[in-house]
Image (cartoon, rainbow, N blue to C red; front, side, top):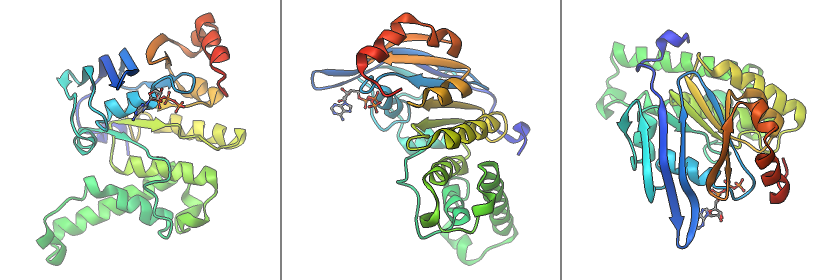
Length: 265
Ligand code: ATP
């Protein structure tokens, strides 16, 4: 797929003053940042910094206590996850969406449900349009599997995949929903350094081809620093710093937060 086939016009994801409290705990407090078209943005921070909560707020799994999420200037705060997905913001899930008894190809095929919605009667009386849709879905699934470097495993049951291959399949499933902005929550968890490097190379090829932008939460520092254009650092629910990877790596406040937080990074 070329970038020209990505349908809606470029849109910036704007996070403005986002906050979420659980009882007395401010899991996320007054967070603001943008994900612009064509960017890969890394969201990092020590354990418990609020990254996953922030993800859940953006993707509609939580409703925010304060603040706004805007997409292309439109207020999308509080939309349901399936509405966000239809608007182009799709997140990956660790393992949970993978059907182990299905092959890699079949898994990615099932992930195309957003695109392939059709009335029930069409299933029983398929016309040319339905057959064309089915063809295009199979073509898209094949392209995604190959892009994710799983071409040699296309007919392999997911149960036989390695940890690294499962991570790639998780991203492939998210890509099947045709995201404009792909959101990845610790996609490299459990990968060794070689697998993480390969994963990073594949991620970079997605931008501008299968997706427009990527927001990634990741503890693997060499991966996230290697793929991101910009890094947002969270600490105790708040934004501690934002900047280019090289600036963030040399930022004393960030270094102190990680050393003080006992993080594994
Ligand atoms: P990690 O890197 O360990 O995954 P994180 O940066 O993703 O951490 P969060 O999981 O967002 O951090 O958690 C931020 C804070 O909010 C933590 O103190 C956590 O205990 C708290 N928290 C998160 N979800 C809930 C919840 N559903 N109920 C109560 N507290 C929560």
